[in-house]
Every structure is written in structure tokens, then in C-alpha cells.
Length: 251
Ligand code: BTN
Image (cartoon, rainbow, N blue to C red):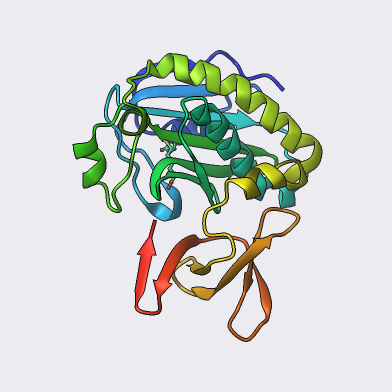
């Protein structure tokens, strides 16, 4: 697959929202279409949260994929994107961890978030937010405190150049995912995986479950061994690290 040359805007509400609006209005956006904004006025995160970013500090973009025939495979597409972002970040000599379902952490602090949204039956919009040139003061104000490439490497990057490099690597990982789903990602995900083998809490707020993160199923769903020894599959939600029974940390 090939991504299009990114369509850059100074300001948009949210790159995910605008792609969906344009599709709804009947615009024939191609497979691999990329929309990027220097500033988002209504950036959205997962589970109804907002995503804050400042001009020149963050990379915020979304892309569109058509012809997603196998919907069960959809869950692992953002995982493929997370791995591509991790691979690019590792070129700056930082140690990146993947956090299920599709966050990236450095030293337990979030540096990248991904929001994937299905559009009609067979299209998907994937939005990526990366903290690039965010200073420590701003990162500390996020709840929970985040980090950025500037903080971790001392290097200030040109956002457009970073996106161009990232798209090349993403093409490789998205293509692997299209051919083989999560099985093409499993080892890359596992080798960077945060909390694997640890006691965690996971869920979408209504029905949180606790247990040991023992691995991932064929579609990238999280496998949790509960206290009674039963293994359950978790398909959506947030992962919370449990350091002791009274002390849960959302990372
Ligand atoms: C999360 O971690 O909750 C997901 C964050 C996703 C943020 C990106 S920024 C580009 C795209 N547009 C949005 O409104 N959200 C995503």
C-alpha cells in the first residue's frame, strides 16, 4: 500500500473528524489518504477523552484505509501503526514500550496515542498523536504526566519531516498487517510490551477486570488470567497497572 502525500492544514477541528465528514459529504478520498494539522481545536482521544496539542509541539494526523473486509482484523491495525511509530522513535535511541491496546510509552509516560474509528462497513480512519517538541513543563501538566521526543532526546524535530519518515515505515507495517493481521505483528509487539506478565486492571470503566496479562490472542485481544485461574479475552478498554491492591496507576 502507498500513503498519499499528506494534506497539511494550519488548523482543523480534528483530523479524524474531518476525514469522516468529507467521506459523509461524498468526497471520494482514496485508500491511504493522509490529513495532517499543525493545530487541532477539538482533538479527540479514545473513550471520549480530548487530545491536547500545541502548534509546533505535536504531530497530529489521520489516514484512511478502504476495503477492510475482515472486521475481526480491525482491532490490530492501530497496533501495527504503534509499532511503526516505535520503530521510528527507536532511531533516536529511545526505548519505547507498546501499551495495549495502542499507546506508546517511554519510561512509563505516554508519548503517542492512536484513535481508530470505523467508517461505514469497510473503511477505517486512524488518527495518530505524537508528542514531538513538547517541553517538560507542558508534559508534566498532562494527567497523567506525559513525555515527548524533545524531553527524551534533547532534539527538536521538524514535524513535517517526521511525518514523511513515519509514513514510509507505516507503509511496511500496514502492508504486513493487511496480509497476515496480528500474527505479522506479534513478535514486534511482545518484545516492546509494557506490563506483560504483570498484575493489571483492564476494562472500559463499567466492568473492569483484574488479573495477570498473560499474552494476546490471534486478533490482538488481551488475554488475562483472573484470580480464579480462568483466562478471559479483553477486546476493548484501558489498561491500568496495579502495583498493590490499593494503588492503581493509569498510565
Ligand atoms: C488516545 O490516546 O486517546 C488517542 C489519541 C489520538 C489523537 C489523535 S491526534 C490526530 C487524530 N485526531 C484526533 O482528533 N485524534 C487523533
